Amino acid sequence: MRAEGANQSLVEQLIARGALWSPPLIDAFRATPRHLFLDRVYHHHPERGWREIDTTRPGRGELRLIYSDRALTTRLSTPEIERGSLAISSSSQPSLMAQILEDLRLAPGQRVLEVGAGTGYNAALLAYAVGGEGKVTSIDVDRVVLGEARRHLEALPGREVELRHGDGRRGYPDGAPFDRILATAATPDLEPAWLEQLAEGGLLEAPLDLAPGLSYLVCGTVREGRFEGRLLRPAYFMPLREEGTTGRGPTPLLPGPERMTDVPAPWAGWLGRRPTTWALSGGGLLVALAFLGWLEGLSVGYAILPDDRPAYGVGDLVRGQVCWVSARTWRVSGKAGHELGLRLWRKFLDEGGPWPTEFRLTAQVGEAARAEGRLAYRKQGARCGQVWELIEARERGGV
Image (cartoon, rainbow, N blue to C red; front, side):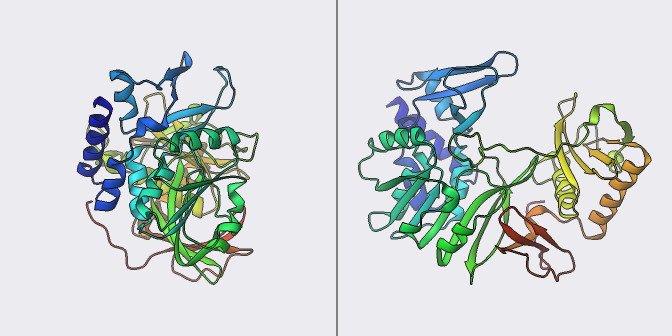
């Protein structure tokens, strides 16, 4: 009863926070206890490293952890707990999972492909939502992860989930077309196979890892081989990986902010004693500037400053110009770095302060289409040509 009560309490929190609202998905979360999908979790301490927590027979403390609204690491890159171990699999934050499933507008009878099986918890929720007439296929490159997901799903025998071993970047052609394709691992680009295997009028949702500190869920549909959608919200997931790898590739690094010159941020005089949320939140000023810098072709970095405040770096690595922006100060590589930051700031203001979620993404295999809007950018991703275009009829609420 304690576990059941903890699950119902979590569901009520998700409803109250606005992450979960449709009756079918509320029923799905109520009928899918999270603890059935967790054998162990790993907690990381900056100084002491990883600690394993056994959750097979959860007591009060373990239930409090399992039913907290937080992502939980479930697998490390090495069998033994070592200081250098990396988290490679997790159970996502329940409020984020709820929002993702709401985005997909699930309905009975749909065919769903999930890329990344995880613990099986998300697949169980999907299976409940599409009902007996629908079908959920979950594909994963890691056989150990698949084996654990299969065992977890056996605790809910009514959930029909087909588990497949394979590289999720290639989708699952034998089951196509799919009404919904959901990637639950971060990817630098949309995969051609996903575009090919999505049914007409279907929805594709995936976490795009654009640059350090810039990871967003993108959702849209495919028409005549071309994806059209938009960014929805910040979302940080484990990277999509090949078998036997951690999925983390090399990232061009900006020179760090620690040895650069401090100058006041242009908005420093607007802030009180404490920075307001518009400056620091996931959809706030810093991330919007960094995203615009990425669109402009600048390299982007992310760091936590000694005062525990986040900072985004933008830079031209060829010219050695770097500007790190934080709530109160900029840290710049001399006059040229300061001027680079000011040019980006001016562009941001002149265009009405665009947010990342106010850009439309069009993606297709091969070269990007022509960029024609007032504020439009062509980018070449790892798999697809991309066009990012500011939506002209912008609407904002809850500012």
